[in-house]
Amino acid sequence: MTLERLHLTRWLSNAVLLLVLLYFGRPFLVPLAFALLLWAVLNAFVSLLRHVRFPAWAAWIAAFAFIAAALYSVILIVSNEMDVLIQQIPTYSAKLAQIWSSHPFLHQFVPAVDVNTLFKTSDLMAVVGNAAGSIGSSVTEIVLVLVYVGFLLAEQRYLPAKLGRINSMCGTRDESSIIHLISQQVQAYLGVCTVLSLTMAAITYGTLRLVGLDFAGFWALVMFVLTYIPVVGALGAGLPALLALIQFGIFGPAIIVLAVLVAVHFVLTNIIEAALLGHSLNLSPFVIMLSLTLWGLIWGVGGLFLAVPLTSAIAISCRHAEGLEWISDLIAGPPQRKHNWPIHWLRHER
Image 1 (tube, rainbow, N blue to C red):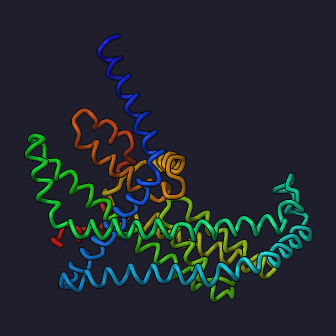
Image 2: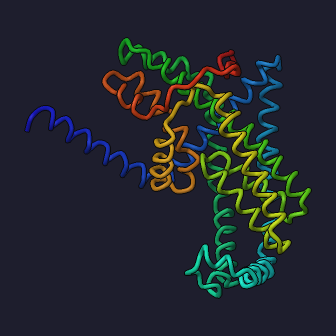
Image 3: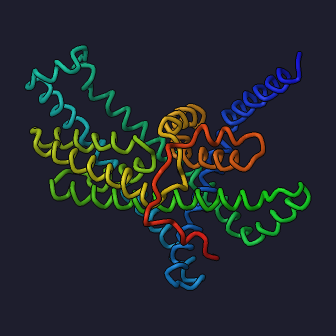
């Protein structure tokens, strides 16, 4: 076996081993990854407040208050509206079956659907019940994530010194600067996505309240979560639109909800996000779709949220690793124009 084949064989073996470890280490690695992301969001939020002249202590208090309020709101919305939604499943199922039977032209789009099976109340309630159970079972993971974040915050003041010692022991390459660059760009991505997701949730809530749709708070929470995932957020707009069709029995409110949410999502993710982030996360759209598929298969739903930050971190690491620059070039997107709104507040001292 030649040296090149031996090198390729080792590389493929290591890649397969890494995928196996990522898959079977999911119960440990997913909470840790979410803890790192939440830690990055907190630091990004504090950096933003420091940039607008907040004292350090006030910025950290505001950051913790924001996280606590967000968790409380999620628990309140899920606990209050999930029970009511489960109770309304039989009514919604009957209305949806009536709409389906009274509009024969819908059968042309999905002709092979068995309406009796599709709108079977027991099956729908089982699906919603399983979703509620999975939300309840994730409380333990949330607590574990918060514990990890607490330890990360307690030790983050010592990280620069640790990275400096590692750099001095490992050689002359400045690994600490690479880690700092990865941290900056991931924080920028998460900070912008959080602001845009909050905006999407607020507009969703206001639109659904104006239309008079039930469970406006729940759907606002759903759109907040889905906006973090590229592409999926736009598809998620169809869920409240479907509920509008079921609730009102006419297409007008559903079309209004769908048009408004899709338009707002497009502006937020394709115009404002691109303007704010600029070159910092220049990933190919095809690579983003591949990363969503790969991380979704490995880590499930959690992998969908982590796909873009993880892929960005891999791209930055390869860009600064000798011999792996081609990987960074391969997954990069097309050249972008410089925008007028750079994310510069992360460069300030926290």
